[in-house]
Image (cartoon, rainbow over all chains, first blue to last red; front, side):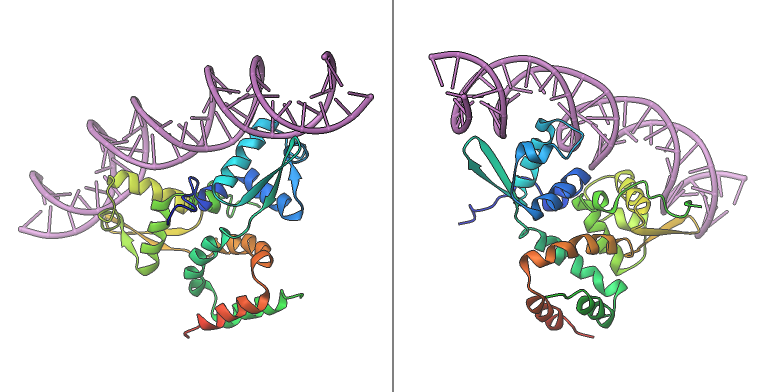
Length: 109
Length: 109
DNA sequence: TCGATATGAAACCATTTGGTTCCCTTTTCT
DNA sequence: AGAAAAGGGAACCAAATGGTTTCATATCGA
C-alpha cells in the first residue's frame, strides 16, 4: 500500500528554515531529548518542539520515548530526494570530471 | 565592500516552493520571457512574476531586457551551496563506493 | 500617432509560519 | 504520596507568503 509515508511536510520546505537545518546538524551528532536540544536555541522549548515536529513529518528525524523524555535523532534518508533533485542541475556547473575530483578529495574512509 | 551579493532570499527558501522549483526546471531548458513562462502555470502572470523575483533575489535566475520583454534564464551557481550543505549528510546513507557507482552510471558525456 | 503587447508596481487579502504563554499528563525522585 | 522534571497541546499573535486585481509604463507594429 501507499500508506507508509504520506509526508505532511515536504523535505524542501522542512529545510527551508535555518533553525531546522541547525537541528539536523545537531541531531546528526547524537540522539538527544527535547530539553537538551532546546537549550541550544534562543527560543522556547515549545518552539523547538514544533520545529522537531515539522522535521518529523518530513521524515527527517525519528523520535523515541525513553521514560519521560522524547529523544530525537537524524533520519537522513529523505535527503536523497533533495540530492536527486539537485543532480539534475549538476550538469550546469560541473563537468563530471570536476565533480569526481571533489568527490575523491573529500573521501576519507 | 560586501555589496556584491547580499541575497535577500535564501536559496533554501527559494526552492521550498514547488512552483519555483518548476520554474527552475523550465528555465534550465531555455531563456524565456515572462508571458511565455506564465502560460505554463495556473496562476496569474503577476504571481509568476513574483516567484521569478524571489528566484532572482536568490541568484537562481538572471533577467535580461530585450525590447519590451524580460527574459529569464537559469543561473545554477547558487545551488552549489545546497550541494555543499547536502554533502555533509552523504556519509549517513552512502558509503563512497555506492555513491561513485551512481555517479559513473549517470555519466553520459 | 494609436492601439496592442509585455511587464512591473501597488494595494489588498487569506492562509501559513514561527513564535509566545499557559495548562495538562506522564514519569521520576525522595 | 507529593513535588519536580519532561514534554505535548491549545489558544493566541505578528509577520511572511502566495495569490489576486487594478493601474502605470515602455515598446512594438500598422
